[in-house]
Image 1 (cartoon, rainbow, N blue to C red):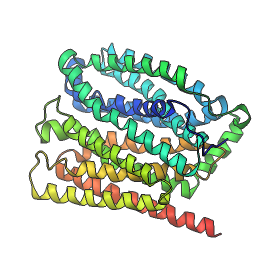
Image 2: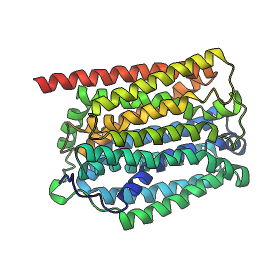
Image 3: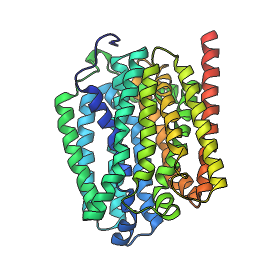
Image 4: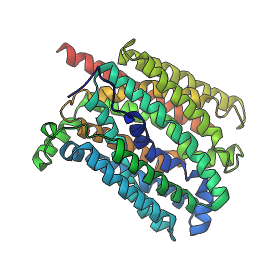
Length: 402
């Protein structure tokens, strides 16, 4: 039941954008609180950093199942239950008394946060094909880009006024509001006759089919590597901003404001190109922009000492190019599996989340020692992403020619 001419259900883009934004918001909002959390809980900076890994790894593992469960039980039900669990975990974080408690509760948040991101992508493909799907995916990306931009601002202000526990209290309130909105506005987009079984044999065969597809894996690798080029800055934000650039805990807008403005502008432009350029042509434009941004980032960091604004100037250009290509790569990754979109979206998010976890736990700490190493990290990850996208295009051409 793909519709290409009728408008989407009322409010669906805003609801899907909020669902996709909740996970990134819960990452970025408490970054300014890292020093306070370390002092309050008697933890080291690395132990506090691992609360991100504790979130991202369970997020990745559970992301494998959200889509398959929604393929069997329906999209709406799984989202509502996940929001309840996420809100309860956020409330628990606000009362944590040991860093181990925070690890466990952040893991529970990671388990539940992925449902909104994974299932929102499947819902787009439930509703639309072709340029209409591209436009809706781009509009959603543009709208939820606003959340990561304001998250560290809100978190920084809450930290300055009330301390780190108030950040998680705010997440509880935001989750309750989103739960009410989903209850009232989110329709069920997967009818009973299109649902897939949760039989172990069927799931095993389908997971093997998806995760062994070279075309799928290349598209996912391109998505993950493109994003990692920016995500190393997100995960290094306290070190990058507060130590290297001398920014206060309330000044995280220096990074997240321009970066998310670039992401929103790129998503908007990607939507404008829907139906005018092919997905592949839009992706090429995205990589040209990313390459220019990453090269400029290296040159600026070699030429000048760390400082504002030049140390952050290339980042919004990079996120513009990244978000220009992102909706197209997302749609291409789901294209080979029209009957298992939820499961394929789960596998896509699983692979990206594994990459994000590696960035948070290994790559970002290895690179945040200087602004130069971060710049070289960005350009390297972008080049690997471009190679994966090129391989995807070649494999797709061969399959179509066969």
